Length: 241
Image (tube, rainbow, N blue to C red; front, side, top):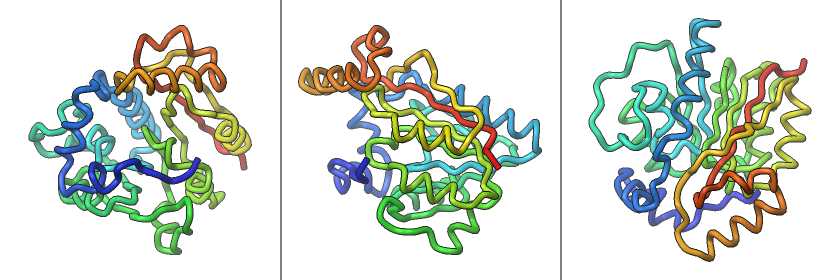
């Protein structure tokens, strides 16, 4: 659960996302985009109910999920030029430790506000905590290898933050602490029975390590992995008072 990004300076903190996308293209990363349909459906549901939707995207990188929300374009088309954002009463707050990635996302209007801070080891400022007030949805896709409970606990520290939660941990992830946290916070917590391919494996050793961890942490997923490093979906709603 430590906050760590492998080769951070080489891939995650460039001025533009091209190196990131090109390096993962060979592994069919997010093709198809497992976030796209579920995220849009959730945001649209909140918009129908409340008329507006504020989303906190944890470890947002270059704004991949913000672009889904604002432009309805999946990850695979990220380098394609898009038209003006589709008219929606949405606000996206991007959280990451990469200042370059956040600057890119903000400059391209994929996010509206940014928080550039390692919340695993430092605290939200008063201004940042105030920015999170009124959040409707917290999203974490691809974040769980380096973002843990300290970050989520700070986001949900205020009882006034009743935001629903959506996350996609990899199938090898030890979900015990996360589930205990969510079940203590929400009335409704659900784990998808289906897994979603995130990418192909980089090498045989990675595959063997992944499958070994799945067999220990989430053996129920073993029959669905189809030679991909896959994720499962966790959702939570109805915060306890």
